[in-house]
Length: 628
Image 1 (cartoon, rainbow, N blue to C red):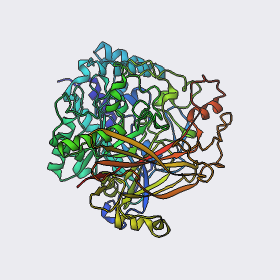
Image 2: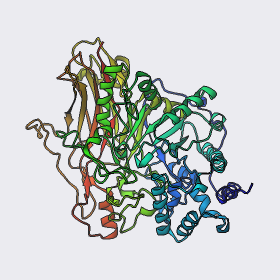
Image 3: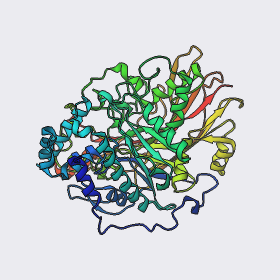
Image 4: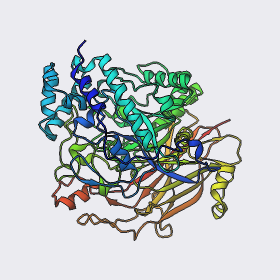
């Protein structure tokens, strides 16, 4: 049987040797060679969601950097971006997950490199020609491919399961070998993973799948393509089968709930009907954390859901109009199933009814960059994909993803990163920290944030070894406070600014609970802030910290705010009979947005609706309280 052009081209690619690359010594690879501390002593920074030229959309949008380049960049090496710009992180990352799309893994790259005469499908030949026109033609082709995907109208030749399986296996095995060369326990952790891009009808239900294990186990499976699936049951079954067959471990991380049109965090089972305890238990076990902030917007909260929270709505502009592809409009009634704070409240409601909380998850950030460059800093933002790497027009450029024509480049965020409190920089230690939810999200700055909840913490604990006390007498972020303590729970809160970043404005505790009438409630408490003697609360609100941003020069000054904030806070409204969660939000002083840096670099005149400054932030995983 004659092989399709896509498969033939992929086999040719797989036979090519990569020359001149820097490789890490493969000796002493095992995690067991790295000693773990008694408890987490430092935070490790990483990105769990990066795409390379192996992703069908990333290559289609112009990305020509492979996984090796992505790993070199994350480790701190300088690389040239697809558009030829030199790129280097100011500080290396500690870990990386390349999460290329399982769907069509390597497909657009194979189509691009295929002999044109072998492409018999007229639509695919037209896409081939468009990709060879240059970056703009390639982006138009990718927009059409995404539109066809959202309408279940891809050409039959692209859906040939046998050929797709062979191509996926070849690309996947090469990918595993590359990742393994760069995994250096104790220094840099490279995880094996992929993205399960579930989006029936364009509604974003994507998951990043991450393995704890190395090639000996992971090579026994290949990424699976959701294509036209509508619920996550298939990927959960895949994960359970993998663990049963190999003895390994795997988790999934949902992302961009803000583009799911209300489907990511439902109160019911998918498709309707009461959520069962078994379904809730399965989801909670397999999906311990959620990606709350990234380039395609921030999903912490929305002003419609949290009208009394003046800091809600960060990074929502443009993403609240419709779903991912843009072919289904959004209405405010969908928001409750899309934003993380509301999901945490819904989890309490479901737990009250079933005894199990499906949304007892931690929070991380990651980039979802499709440039192979894991950048989350505003002053070196390389865009969502290679079509909006740094250039004069990218802020005002329409982002033609599928049928969507309502979003513009400035609405992307230079966000975010995952902070992980682990006992070592290894796959095992970082994975285990994700499972126990001792993790937090930032929109890019590397603030050091710690939280412990207990029953007897006092201000005096901050003068001693409070971290040791936190583990000995309480639980860290991601933990659960059991009933039986005296009085109200108390929390040790500590936040340090990014060493090369902005000062801190304030630290807040976000509380959610189910009142005695069975209604979900929330409240945001300002618990410690800079210049507390001068900034006295008025009307229950702390005055603004001020603003030193010079938008003309894209600068700010750390003459306001504080380099560190710490306190012990006790819940003044605690009711021991009701379920509750508490997470910490840390707010920076105002700083320039990436658009402000572009404005200076390219001498731009921009429309007034484009924000040139922002207050970046961190979100910790919650601590839950369950009545006896």
